[in-house]
Image 1 (cartoon, rainbow, N blue to C red):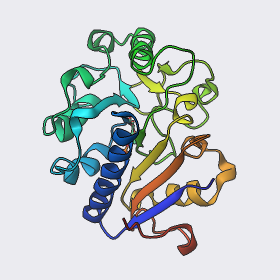
Image 2: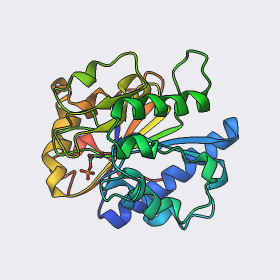
Image 3: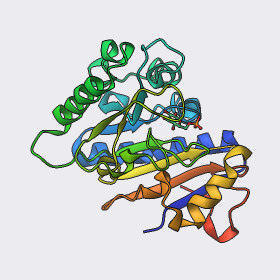
Image 4: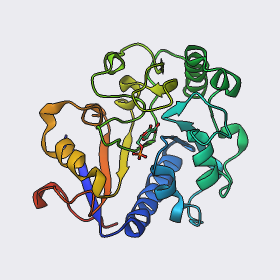
Amino acid sequence: MPSTVYSFSSTTELSGGLNAFVEKVSREAIADHGAVSVAISGGSLPKLLSKDLVHNKNVDFSKWHMFWADERCVGHDHDDSNYKEVKKTLLDHVPIPTNQIHSIHEAYAINKQSEKAAEEYQQQVVSFFGGNGSLPRFDLILLGMGPDGHCCSLFPGHPLLQEANLLVAPINDSPKPPPERITLTFPVLNHAKTVVFVTAGEGKQDMVQKIIEEPQLQLPCQRVQPNAGHVYWFVDDAAAGKLKQASYGTYKL
Ligand SMILES: O=C1O[C@H](COP(=O)(O)O)[C@@H](O)[C@H](O)[C@H]1O
């Protein structure tokens, strides 16, 4: 099924729409199974997500379980840390219980032991979802889009795009620094209930156009196609600047 694209006149409007959408996903997940499993990536996303969400009293954050869609092998207080950015923008302001925040093993990350970090993180994912052999099904995966079309730490042309067994994979040659990282893999992304890409700014408009209107390119973001879920794009008008009008609509609750 094609993804749904919502474009907003500004990043302020985008954050407002995303806030309303996340509130709805959270409410539905809690009504269905009493908890919300969320995976989030880094970059520009955490700030766009958190602007209004941190003030939203209709979201029951006590039921949230936070995971990272990808993480860099650095300490939690390093400026490259996706954990640090999410902590600063979101976790420091909302009441998610600390034992429901699933971050990368810091010692492995500091020592750039990406294989061990990925293995340990996969174990955290399996422990939460249950290790009965079935794939984890996240309620919500929030992703950014790199200007080259990457998502998580899944880069164009990289062998990790073919990874079919691991849930969490190490990478030691990320073309975007730092080179050592861990990432959720496509089997996990494509088993999620809801995946939301969030991207803004004119610098992203060429890639947004390619991803939405040229599916044959098979860029990493285009390979996110949950088999029983849906992909949404939340973009501002600057990022949507090269899309045909027919490719997007305006989000209304
Ligand atoms: O390296 C990364 O980049 C992407 C995109 O970041 P953005 O700043 O262009 O939004 C991000 O989604 C990913 O988590 C991160 O590790």
